[in-house]
Image 1 (cartoon, rainbow, N blue to C red):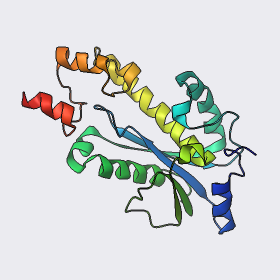
Image 2: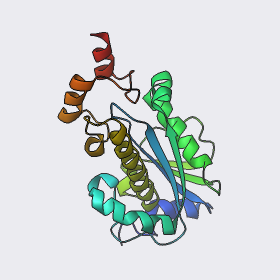
Image 3: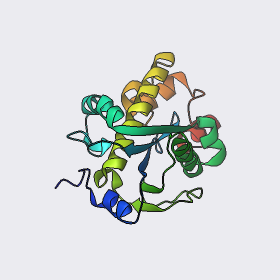
Image 4: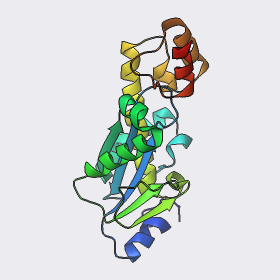
Length: 205
């Protein structure tokens, strides 16, 4: 049995404890120098599509191919925290805020959350399981991982149209050489995270 089958051990363990609405929760975008952090909460209401896996193990083309299939078999909530919120709160707190917004956006409140990683947000007040590497161990978290990645990548590609030269359509705001070269040529935009050391250093020069 695949670890990402509908009968995955993590989902089943939650159901064995009486949960009816099991939701996977993941985020993307903690590390980039630019753009928001995006979270997704995903509740499987049908079998997950073939080939679902941790978003980092899938090509962009494969993720895009999975998107309509996931939208058909999941109840989905998205949440974001803006660059301003990241700079005001810090990236950890902003990530937790984005995750709270994703859960709040669901039509059906969860009675068990499967959360990727080992960092429980302070707002979580329902039964939950923290799963390190959860996007490779839980189909609910994997669905959230893929959908969050697609949403953020699309958003960064749209921002790249407004701010060409940083390569955001390819690097999604991470500190690649192309992004560094763009900063050297064009400077810091309103979409850059000023609280992050590389950007802060540029502004202080």
